[in-house]
Length: 417
Image (tube, rainbow, N blue to C red):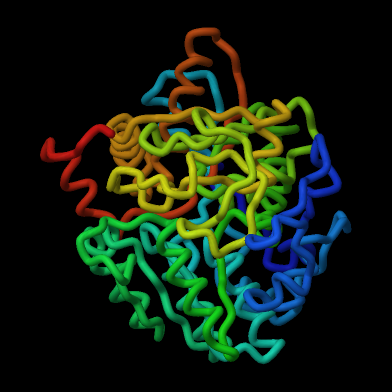
């Protein structure tokens, strides 16, 4: 048996809040003007109070609203799959499992928090949401979620990705989203997530009927994603595994990584590994400091590893990982030594993605390819030592709307940044 399913009634009904389990208390966000700790009233122009409460909650478990569960059940629980064909090709004694988040309507894990955020905003009367998107997965997910709750959606897409991935725009527009390239005031600029956040925040701050929605980084986003790891934990038990030896996920802002890793946080025998691009090595080469989440300095300052809010990364295909900062929760764990971080070049991730696609039949998104590469390397290391380790990674999204990237790789046009 290679696929492990949970029945619909076994889907988690509460999210796991990692804040009480962090090695050190999380430092508060700071107001961009006063540099004093930001309170709920400071965040209210951007977010509904339901999400602000989750951002600061110390409750270990937070119930998932029934309206959110009803929509999540369109695709959840997602499968846990043992990659036996890949194991055989690698000749490894390791057992490799992946959590397949590509089965969501938008094709990635992003939909888990998009549905929750659209619900909480609609419940408090928000008529319109603005957001940024890198590769387009988050904008796609939020466009879908807003359609479920009759909320207008405006997406500012990093210009390099807007031009590389035209079908992402099409699917967002199919679900009713409005998409424009970012930065809006400089058509010659390739853009960055920080600049797109600035565009989206500026838009939201200027309208009373609008809130801003963020697809990664913030505490409530990682909270919503923990449904991934909670399901995976139960599915590994179905597979006869006591625990994974290592949990791996790609990391840009930290949402899919937090989603699969945080439910294993309290088990010190489980290694947690963040994988980022060499061209945007936030955790491996950045500094830990307070920094703005956007490029201009409109958002609260967050305690995180950062390359500087004015950093503009190269236009690699993994647009969702091109962010100057990281989640405060992920940064806290890396700083404390509870989580490892490594950076990989683009060429090696596509090499592993093609190997995975040919062995397992699944085409990873360029972002997901970072986790695939790290899982392959872990399996090859186990081959050298003869260790029967259990490797779990998050297959965070498919690459069907990223085929131009594969075309570049397969025809030797890929820049190995």
